[in-house]
Image 1 (cartoon, one colour):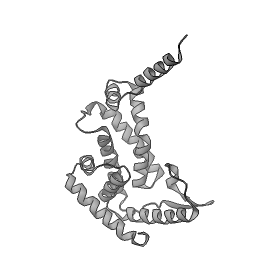
Image 2: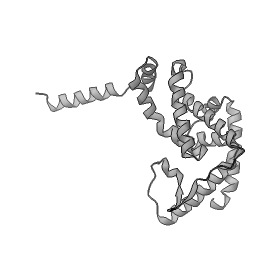
Image 3: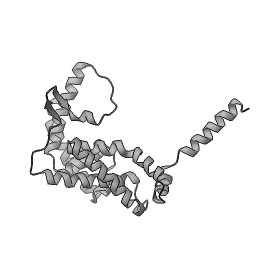
Image 4: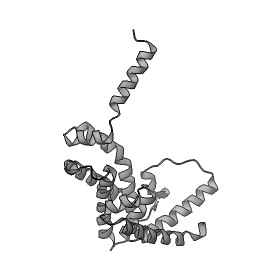
Length: 208
């Protein structure tokens, strides 16, 4: 009969074997391990979907991008050579697909985040939930007003400014990685972010 120490040790060993590093998962997926690929997808699916939705403001378009992103990852994973981080490589795919979609959409009116339904106003951001702390009603109202202003400004940014702003402030990526994701220099990404931030600060002046 196992002692308590034996049980704890067995659990620790089992846990260690289950916690594969990302690099190990990628290599396994490259060898055709579907389970490893599915685990990679689960690690990034929420961020990919949310990033696409933040940029496109359309649940349908975001889900189309989401599917296309992981289809491309599946087809091209064998070409990944660890010359950059996996998330940089992945977000490059997301960014490029979203940029293409934004450019195609430029000639038609962009959908608003808040839409009217028979049951009243609905914020489509709720389709991609995120963890957030509970706030009091007054603060929640202010947050809604700020969010509405932010979404308005984001819709007025150029496609590249919008992607850079998203990658920096919502995905937390460094400027160098953003540049790598978009195929531009770090300085170019920095200048693009500066323009987007200035526009945002000007629009949010009343809330500062």
